[in-house]
Amino acid sequence: MGQFRVQCISHPWIEMKKMQTAARFRSQLWSLKMPSLCHRSFAAISTYKAVIFDMYGVLIPSPVKLATVFEQQNSVPLGTLGKAIRTGGEVNAWKRFMRGEIGAEEFVEAFGRQCSEIIVESCREGLSKPDPRIYHLCLNRLGVSAHEAVFLDDLKLNVEAAAQLGMHAIKVGDIAVSVKELEGVLGIPLSGFVPGPGSAPVATKLPMDQLTQYLRKALHLSDKADSVAVQQLNPSQSNSLYHLTTGGRHLLLRKQQKTSRAMETEYRLLKSLSGSGIPVPEIIDLCEDPSVLGAPFLLMEVCLGRMFSDPSLPGLTPGDRRALYQAMQHTLCQIHCLDPRAVGLEDYGEPVDYMGLQVQWWTQQYRDSETPPIPAMERLIQWLPLHLPKHQRSTLIHGSFRLENLVFHPEKPEVVAVMDWGRSRLGDPLTDLTFSCMAHCLPQDNPLLTGISDRGLVQLGIPTVEEVMGQYCSSMGLEEGVPDWNFYMAFHLFCLAASRQGESKSTIAGQTGSGRLAEQVADLAWDFATKEGFRIFNAMPRSPHAGTSPLKGQVAE
Image (cartoon, rainbow, N blue to C red; front, top):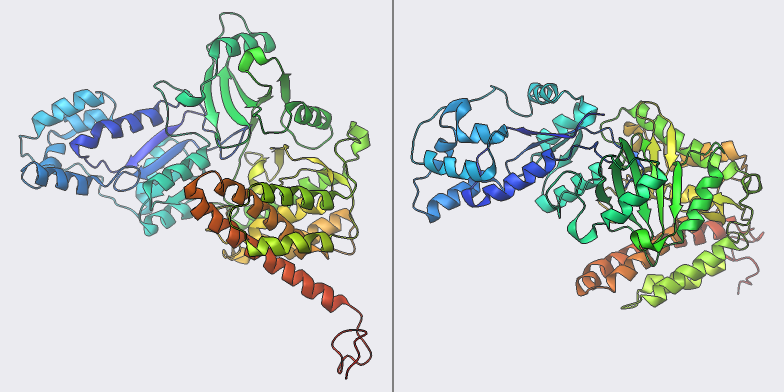
């Protein structure tokens, strides 16, 4: 898998006061000597090996503007810093710093001396973006393929050129937002670190002595085994997730939070599914001893493969996209075809009136976190119980089945692991199917779930909702299709709005941001409820005198 590496296109100079901060950022990226972890994964290794970016206005503020301000504020002739940074050719302080030959403090001191000289010497490749040759040059020097690289730039033209070559491209607008997006793609926190490779954020460090002792016993390691490297993933999730490296092994640790589902429930599920044909991560152990980490946790093997955070699957061919979506639906059918009794899960949750209980539970979540009333939510609370699907099957369901919770084979269109089983139970399988299509109904810029409704699915090669439904119904033998489609979509959006409303209650900022967002999602949910109402009305038998009376049984005067 190789080491995680970073390539900067061009070498711009930086304002003196910002230099040490930029140097720390650079050294943190270079110090990640572990394979890069993919987005929202707690048991997967990504195939990304490099991040390529132009430092001008991308991951640090534009140095041109900063240097100009510095020169103006300190009565330095304009252009002095730019000239000084090129002084001395390949042996100047800047070149030595960029090659890692000197540290930040040494550079600042040496560069300060160089600023008194006005010698111009330009070192250029003779290429500039979006010329494909400069991208290939970076890839060749890094020794990686385009599909193993993430590219960042603040110019759309440059980003599009990188994407066409197969790189995962990120258009940089707000720097902080872009860094968060990069964190999402790699699954590696890029802020809040203490020095040293593989360090966890200071606020979430684990008791290493207790953890090391536990791992040596659980993994049968000798007392002389390598130390344990820890890195936290997805700190905002309900269960704290950590990537561990020790004894040449990559492991994932999932620690239970106070409000999350009991670890023993998920442990039982994953153990039961092992060998069933359903791809799940391999569980090593469930530790319920509070003296180790203070709470129960699961220890799992890392699953090697690809994970995708963007449902449009940028960088892939239309054929590859279609194959991955088909593999996704094939796996969902595997889950729903499983006989729970065959794996000892016949009592895994209460399947009776699943949808009714779900509507009640989410209604209570909304009531518990209610701030200003949302009219659409009030209408949905009244509407949903009256329009529950009449025919509900009961199978094992995942509860959060979507593209980003799947690990795909590194090369084949094949799911090698289904992640995040925290909401699984026996219930209505159509909730999984319809939830997997949520992205089809939302735009790309939706802040809650990235959508593809405005992306041109035919050109991308991504199956439409109708095709997804057709594949599923054909595989599962559902001749009637999914007549309650609009109900399920209204239900999922209702749950999403209730969840967002809960977040809005915690802070004043949330009340203005998350609260508005909850209202927008609720309005969309009501749109689907309205569509379902029209469907039911249109399916009603018509009176022989339909032309004179719009409703059956109504007497025209």
